[in-house]
Amino acid sequence: MNKQWTIIEQYASVLKNTQLKELFIEDVDRAEYFTVTLSHAYVDYSRQRINRQLRQELCTFAREIGLRDAFNGMMHGNIMNSTEQRSVLHTALRAPKEKQIKVNGNDIIPEIHAVLERIRAFSASIRSGEIKGYTGKSFTDIVNIGIGGSDLGPNMVCNALKFYSRRDLRMHFVSNVDPTHLIETLHQCSPDTTLFIISSKTFTTEETMTNAHAAKQWFLDNGGASWELHACAVSANLEKTSAFGIPHERVFGFWDWVGGRYSVWSAIGISIAISLGYDHFESFLAGAHSMDMHMAESVEEDNIPIMLGLIDVMNAMCFDIRSHAIIPYDEYLRMFPAFLQQMIMESNGKSVSKDGHELAHHTSPIIWGQPGTDAQHSFFQLLHQGTEQVNTEFIVCACPLNPIDDMHERLLANCAAQSAALMHGKTKQEVIQELSQTSNVDQQHSLIPHKIFPGNRPSTTIMLKELHPFSLGWLIALYEHRTFVQGYVWDICSYDQWGVELGKVLAKQLLPAVKDSTLLSGIEDSSTQHFLSTMHAFRS
Ligand code: F6P
Image (tube, rainbow, N blue to C red; front, side, top):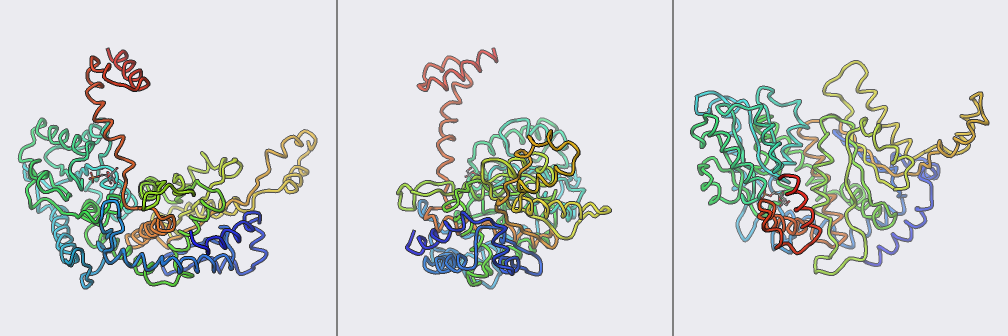
């Protein structure tokens, strides 16, 4: 952290002891000053610990460390994934045809658009029924088999944009190696009308390959023939896809410069194109591209991902807030928190710097959440009165896609009320005043501390005009760039994920002893050994 960061820490330490609601009294234009309104979206960070001076200091910091230059470098192919020596080019996946982006001297835009063209043709043929199964019937069920980024992105987006989907094409996503996931999915499918998409960049991921083999077996065991008509793959590993019986022309490529959690814009999004139609997929890419341009070109003061990303950093480093709740007030966005968990925590859940030094500061917050208003009746108690400080993010749409009476207005009222309640709280005086209106004041006295809301809890609100492919693409890219900002400031490599390796390796080593109790003696760790011997006893 440079000297400018020390200045930020000083301002932040003053704000740490200031009530958020006082900031609105000090600065009457605060609500306007700390919001950004675009034609399709509104972002309000006025309820975060920030004031005009601090915002200026943050912008100076961003300029001093070359944040936007680094982002532009990433967009042009600089090696940002330093531990794997790779470019990080998910932004190229949504760049227009006329752009030129070079990796190792080759312009990658033509290859990207060639794959997009194939996705367009394939998805159109599935939707029209031109591509059929082995009995000549059109497909009714599409089963995507993948995990992590090869599942969460397309799964979340297909659910979020279901309003625009073809209801006679049912989308399914199988990720868990727990066979229940596959079995319960296949109960809804018939082999002659089911298309499997095996989505795996590496085509070696254990869960995906185990599910893929089991799905193929189910298909063959249930009268299926001509597997090659019922499968396609999204992968960078052509050798493995062809060994699995998927013809070359049914494989949609993707590249090592796309990280799994940033891959929804690549052929990994083919299920989105099938479900919504290619034009909607294109609009989804366009929304993300508009955010790329905003991040690349907007001055720091107006730059949404830069401001929100720096606020995230301050929350972790200056205000000891290490829990970040994502609360979409939108049923279609139910999976959004789970999607962001991978994006943010797999990217920035690190504790060493790019050059391998242990960091002296906190990095990624814990990302969690579920839709409002369900969450209100679940964990909001802790948000309002718990001891843990949580940064809460509200996401809501102004216009409903499915209006019934005043239901959407009720949803909006709840969203607005919760962020206001988190900031204002309820003072002792207000509680006493409230209780004085009841007949039994003495009896109620003991309730006073229980009814106080400390307030002063930060939140951000993002409102989309409407949930649409363009606005969803824009929203996801906003979080991607915010994640970039965090990682860049923390000096960590946001684009590798070594932390997922150890467990994978150990699971492989333990599998023989899980299957065969005579091998238990070879396990050194007594805790694991005890767990497995009890498991064998239960199963015998
Ligand atoms: O969990 C680790 C990870 O590598 C993720 O980053 C990735 O999204 C997922 O596994 C799936 O990988 P693949 O697409 O290669 O099957």
